[in-house]
Length: 267
Image 1: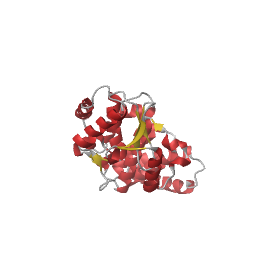
Image 2: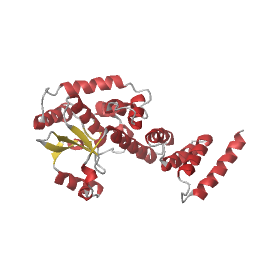
Image 3: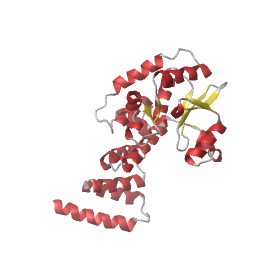
Image 4: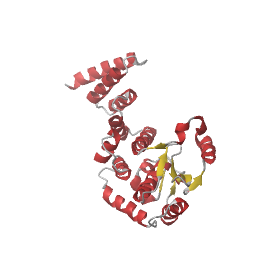
């Protein structure tokens, strides 16, 4: 996961498509990114060179949503496969952010000014060349929206007024997108009660934010469930080091004592 880890740590600006395919290896161990990167290149090649403004968006929408047949998966939204870029290409469906990664990476190959916009509950992309601008709802066949239409959509799906904070409409970088994808997968694996996969996601989230105390606590609970008592103990200790005044400190100390007892019994 070199590209993903480099992106999460800020060590390098790794390509988002490669990082997303490495992320997908949590669900698909041993996944080879190469054929999928080639397929993204093939999709990109169908868009005329030099297309810009509405012409670029029309061509990108035609290639992705009409010819390739990609669409949002509303019927099985919380399937972890929807968070995997390889599955967007194979099954032609996914959640907003995963389809957005495909759109962004095709735009990158054309040098098109398309950036991600991390709206609450519904990721979008935005095209802005200084003369023409639009938000693109990739989950709904590339519908072009203005800010007011985005506001109405997010109010409906997330109950948030995006005009209350200008940050909602600001572009986000590839690192932010990768972290949001990981958070989506974390939620899915918790929903599906898959602690092993959830721990892999938390490992990567802690690569991005090594001082994130809640993630250590969460991983400690999962490691306890997985009977990885030594790892659980280290995570609980890290949590207390980072959050010495945590309101649940007494409970964590009780759990640490239980872990010490379990570890002693194993020796």
